[in-house]
Length: 172
Ligand SMILES: [Zn+2]
Image (cartoon, rainbow, N blue to C red; front, side):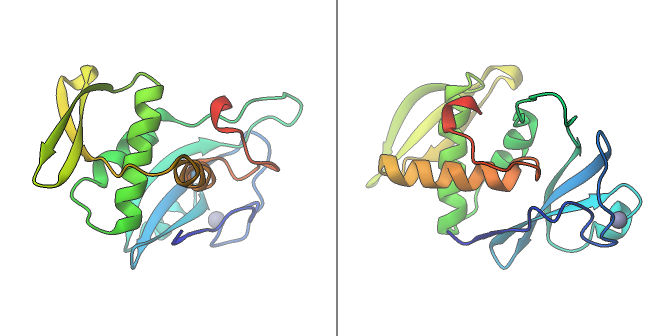
């Protein structure tokens, strides 16, 4: 998978400041020649960090150490990435969009309305009740293993950087 994840840097990518417990910081996805790179910035470096190639970003917070807090995937971030990927023809990005769609269906954010056949391609027609709109997603018919692999990549890309282990898909 052509995604590179700058993670486990334990701090700001610009000033190397290590984030402290409960500190708020920014995570951002950059599209660098169709490779997604995740970078984390402290709040004071964020303005300098928003440079070319910024694809999507979100504000987040270092979780408390003592709590066995489940890392949370922010649905809004997934939706944002999903919407920004619309119309992108790069294979990896299409795969990511398809996997995001499956995940959002499972989380009941989208409803699978129908399958639409056009030429030799099949699309999933998704309904997004919150905004009363529909999306078409190319049905890639990926194998189970491929979906799993991409989902794992997606978690790494979008999760907090303080994970020592990969999450099983179902606990996301
Ligand atoms: Zn910084």
